[in-house]
Length: 290
Image (tube, rainbow, N blue to C red):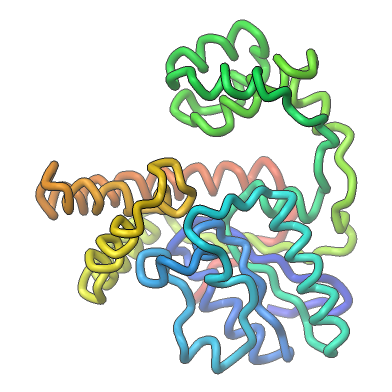
């Protein structure tokens, strides 16, 4: 793969697709700095379960924004984009090429396209919306912002609540605000690449990776995380496989059942990531590792 070193390289695609390995290869070839765009890998508590780059990878090329936050520290897309832009500036100043890698779509959209100038949400509105269960929030969104409801998966609680609180607090749909995005790098400044593999290959890679995680101490890592007493809605507790392994540790299911549920959740997430990349960045290059 040839890189335009005048632009920031951004690698995205579904989890377990090989983005990190590709980023490492490119970084070694072009004196690059790898900057994390995976929300779960930001957190210090889960190195194994999130497949965070290990010591050998970090020795082979500089890695930034990995394991930098405490488990209960909320990182919004705006916060991550600001951290990423600071790392891009630092890389450029050091004569190195910035390579953004990760599959958290909201982060990448914020970095490339900018952020919507949504006013602060009224606290009473936020509290009322967050008190709704997923089904009630979905029904309310279908009434109050049907266009947003049509875009979102019924089980996507986080984005459903966000869209609902925006329309209730501002009187305007979230899509209206998103048309006024500001502060992004801009498409011309980015060389975007979507790492793709056939779906059966992705599924097999996810299964192999989860098996390796379990063999490498994933259960003990999740047990240590739970022992911290973090709130149930702490971001780090929502990482792939964590809820399922936590259920096993609590005695609610067998390890085989937890593994199957974690793989099902991973496959669903892979599909969402593929759909997002097609819709958000249709013009980006597609790359299938050999």
